[in-house]
Length: 255
Image (tube, rainbow, N blue to C red):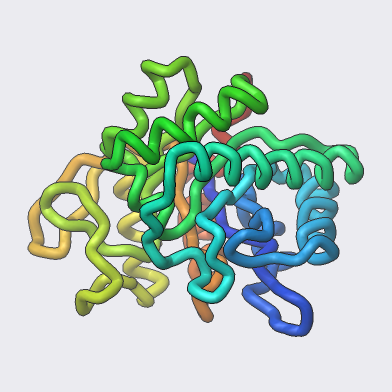
């Protein structure tokens, strides 16, 4: 039976401002990318999400970012490698401390937003992130964009990796994400998204925005937690997978 991980970005509420429905999402996904305070999340909210994930047996990942709360981590920053190295260590360390207090552990690292997109192809910043992960815990897994150079760079540096595809994003014919500035970049039709993900889980292909068929070698699927219909999309994917005999299982199982 096919099996694949389902993940979501959580822990992003800040004070009185609420982002997404972490409790509902944690009943659906197998892995949680939890904010570390640099793009979103406050200590109390992060702790609640970590504790809820631990209670449900959901695998925890550090969702590290550029220091950009105002821009929600979506603004590209040309910072030095030394600064990025320290920023990533700081964020992972903070989440590790919170996880330990909740009787859980951080198993992987997924960069967020602009940092995720930048290091997919930028070897300088990518190496800084890799070096930071190795410095704090070389057994952590790096989650990155499927087919992107960052994954091979990480493997050559001694890190385990997991390739990720996005349920609610359109792809170009080159296998890259369509820019959010372009029409059709974000998908909203739940049934269409579920059908696409069934195809991805079964044979590793997707239809690109131009209608061509592309190969995506992914072990995890992300549903963005900050979209208004995130929970409904995730539920549709899970129900469709169950009907098709596809198992949702963390990529850490057996490791």
